[in-house]
Length: 142
Image (cartoon, rainbow, N blue to C red; front, side, top):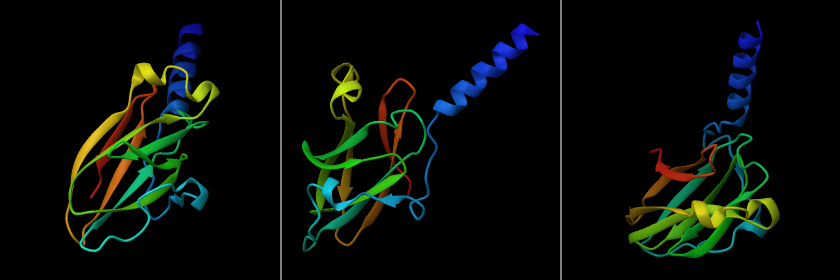
């Protein structure tokens, strides 16, 4: 009986920590004060939207979204941010940002990057997920 209880508790604990995808239409827009760069339309450029998963993992920390190494936004769980980018190659990265517990071990985990190709008039959506180990992934969802 003790083993069954332990297994059930472990499964529940892991399920509570997992992040879950958020539909772009249901994600909250990142507030203006956390949108830092790439907000003005670019003639001949395209748009990307990054949607962060919801869940307990990393929930107390913002995920910094970087474009070409420049901080573009700080995104909370269940939020989305859009960026106007010039046509061509771009590198989008993410990592935990902030002080205190949010910064502990961030250098060890490092940031994860995705190379994308932006086409004129194109709008692509990407999912930002955080593993239970604190590792970030950025993957296209359309």
